[in-house]
Length: 183
Ligand SMILES: CC(C)(COP(=O)(O)OP(=O)(O)OC[C@H]1O[C@@H](n2cnc3c(N)ncnc32)[C@H](O)[C@@H]1OP(=O)(O)O)[C@@H](O)C(=O)NCCC(=O)NCCS
Image (cartoon, rainbow, N blue to C red):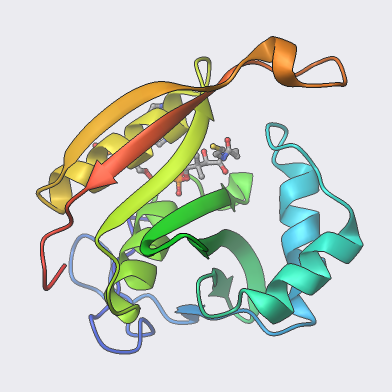
């Protein structure tokens, strides 16, 4: 199947690259219960730090406005979990983003980010952290910056030695902004 694209209004009218509608695909805010699905997608991602299922259930409740799930035929196939930084609400921090392996490479992640930023008012900058070995995520955010006409800076944030438990690579901070208004 081709790449998916969504309409700019409700993110539910999906077309592939040939312009053919792809039925059953939509991007919405998560319900509280979909926190469980977000946990499953994170668990199966093979890359993300898996937080407790309790954490995803709470996040889906408290950060629904700044998070999105991608649904195919009602099943959660991707999620983005974000929050506004408390000391800088114009900055949207993307904590985690993941797409089920069966749906990767079809712009699902790119569309979730675009839908989120287009639905939120007053977001000027976007931040995330990425490890040096995650080429897919690096490209996802570089491409987001290009689409939104924004500068993209990368700097150290959390060093490997900062983690109290083993197995974490250094997390580099990606700062993207100012986002074009109307993006
Ligand atoms: C990172 C991830 C969310 C991308 O999801 P996706 O839906 O496949 O990404 P998209 O199809 O929207 O692609 C977005 C861009 O990334 C590029 N990309 C996607 N997968 C890639 C890969 N494996 N290698 C290099 N580039 C890749 C695409 O080509 C596209 O670039 P373009 O806009 O220049 O064409 C997905 O690979 C994933 O879930 N990985 C595991 C979890 C993870 O690592 N999350 C990020 C943690 S920081």
